[in-house]
Length: 95
Image (cartoon, rainbow, N blue to C red; front, side, top):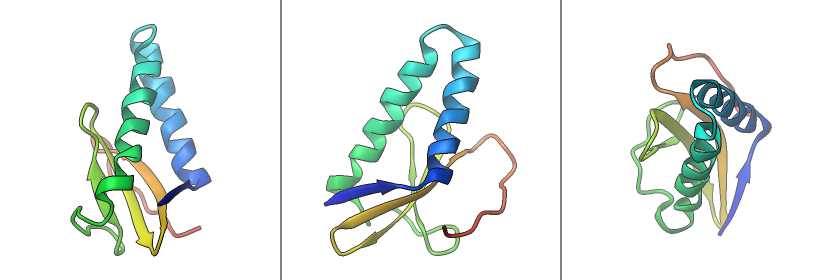
C-alpha cells in the first residue's frame, strides 16, 4: 500500500501545526508526529473506517481533535483532507 497526501490535506496539517506551536513550544512537532502516525496506520487499517462526507472514509486522530478523510483504490490510499473537528465544517472538493 502507498499513501498519497494531497496539497489541501498538507495545508490542513500545516495549519494545525501552527496552531499548536503557538500554544506551547514543541506541541506543534508532537501534533505532526501524532497525525502522521495516524495516517501511517492506514497502511494496516484502510477501509475499515466509517464513510462520512462525500463518500470518504473518516479516521479520527487518537490524540488531537482532527479527522482524516481518505479513500482507497487498489493499492493506493489518498488523503484528501485533515480537518479540525472543533471548527465549523467547510466545503471541499476532490482535487
